[in-house]
Image (cartoon, rainbow, N blue to C red; front, side, top):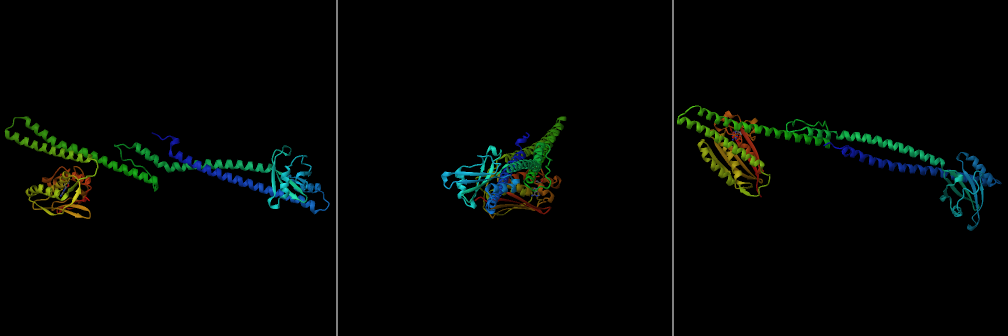
Length: 475
Ligand code: ADP
């Protein structure tokens, strides 16, 4: 199944990235726009105050100048700002309201006027809390007018206004620039972000592709991660390790089934050959007996292989559950030694119990006995006559340690890692009479494993071998 584009991780990450970045850009834009607007208005307010003050100073400073002249002069001075200037004369008493307005000629009559109460509020105000008002009137143009109401002697108010046209045009220009720049920034950031995210997630695609290409027949594939030391690198390494382990197991299984077929085939071929020879012509009784005996031996050999394989597959299939029964390992060891005494004697060996301490472990008696017997059996089989086999059981640091030591032919160092493999035998020719199926130690290992045991082997060729198995002691 292919991941749909809008469901892909890179799409989702990019989307989140754009949403968060977009939010930040919009917030930053709003603050910047507001700040710019405030500073424009502040500038305008300073200008309004300057013009109002100038109007008053012109009237007051030059004796005999009428308000009309003062307004005209100031208007000429600040021509570029196109100010609207007028003097509003109030009645002494509040109820009287606006008495007279001296306006500059550009202001149409009856326009640019506020309610009386606004003027009285201005009249009482001091210089620190000047009154600014905004008014929109058709005959003053289509833009609102920002005005200052500046109280002078009287009760008179100098009223100066400037259109917000330029301010609004500047603000609109700023808004367009911000939208274009913000949009461009977002577009670039999302393209760049998407590129980086996709690059970072690229190995995940390789993982998916490789996983798809892998089958039990071809486990040689690995994912290239380059020199990554991040989480993705870790994922790739873990995945590659997993394939390596799978590859090893599959190889082992293939090897095992090949070995099984081979091991079963050899005795069957012998049996078949012998019977065919037997049938070719009439034989005397002795000959029949000899050949049938040999056939029987091969059949017994086959039975042993099948028994061992069945036993192995039964412990393989067993669920890894903890044993809840405690068993005396010392008694099991003594029993196993006893069962092998005759075999040791027949081989001309001394089988000795070194020291067996009483110790309990969790497990199943029959399985443990088979395990111990197998190890002692090997020691006996691979030790030439005159040698010695020693068995001991020690209790140490919460562990039960079983040791089987022999003075036998030993195991070459290069074979040590392989002796627990199924059907592995160290060079069949080296100690012919002892040779077995190569299943004994795999059974030992499997049984030790399921009892939480750890096996160690020390061996020297022609000097002897020590097998130690450590089990956790039952509490
Ligand atoms: P086998 O049935 O051939 O004995 P095992 O699985 O029991 O198979 O052992 C694997 C190989 O390890 C044997 O072929 C044998 O050469 C070697 N081996 C096992 N135990 C000993 C030992 N005590 N001394 C020397 N070699 C041993």
